Image 1 (cartoon, rainbow, N blue to C red):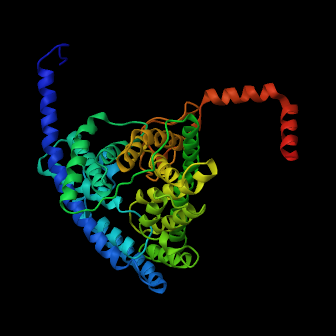
Image 2 (cartoon, rainbow, N blue to C red):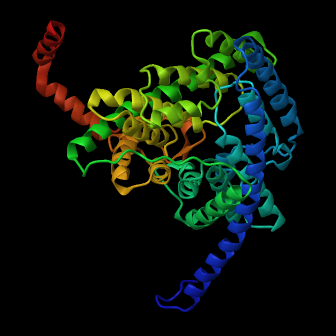
Image 3 (tube, rainbow, N blue to C red):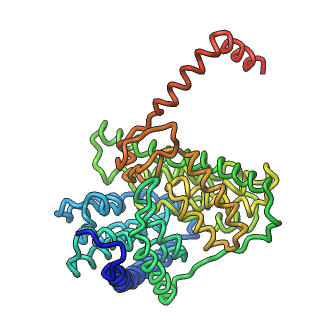
Length: 465
């Protein structure tokens, strides 16, 4: 029944909605913040225990950690008789906000094994998983309908992300923005922000440590400096492209090995651990694990090696592509900071500013979450002037990477360019992107106007160069 334009019922309903989500999101944020805090304290304990082991011990830990990962994931998921996937994106889009509760601890335990053994991954993935699973359980306890259940699961993802990095606003937006490329569900935002803030405060109460950074004072706004940071964003968009495609390539290689030789699934991460053990004979071990000291050094202004981002990319790709479990956003932080720091001096920028811009740019592009990445820059670094620079770089990187993502089940709501077409609301891993008819028609007319003589002259000019 349509409401009249001015009706006292609508504001009452909206007020009830605000109260409803204040209650539900606060409960979810408090429970998720507690759950992720216990996980993070356990992670820190085990990672610190293996942080300074000799190289030969590290080379043993990696394949052992791979085998334990494989066994845990293989046998653990046999307990899931529901038919539900434990993907948070799938839970929102295709499972009416339901997550398999019996498998709640599998990914967090697997992530601790991965990082404690030296696997190169992140810590936010298991926290988002904990958040979504606990929020789904809360929804079942309150017998919420499917639409409210979806929103509550998105709240859980936001709360989990907020508790990891101490960025409640960016975490809230990330949990909503990551669901689809080009579209944000605004009806998800208020509960996500409430859950994110509550989770962050609860995690602080439980003693989870957070690090915030102060950039060097920036000069007054400069168009030239802005364009230079956009160029850093372009470079980091290419870096993110390499990162996403490298992970997909390694996953494909291990999947083919499994199919070709009929390998038992738990053996795949074991072989991945053996590959990692061989790689650290040439790649410094500081690129293993979370690698947060590398990011800190880059943000402090220390010059980073040009190939540093590639070393981290290779280790992350082998770790996650072979079957270890871990987060995929923390590596983006590290890769972005290293790449931005390394390439900034080429453009006359300070390494610290390049690192901050690069961190935001890689997260914006690899995860297709430019708004969350920009807000993360605000919360991590502070200052409105710096935000202008990270924003330009983040959006540029988001466009450069095209229609790729570290999340294959992320939906494509809209194409990033009017020259390309996609079917809306298809998972990224199942959809092909095509050039638009208008672009193809323009290109055909352009070639006809130039004629064969133009192309021969162009080829000859290139060869002379």
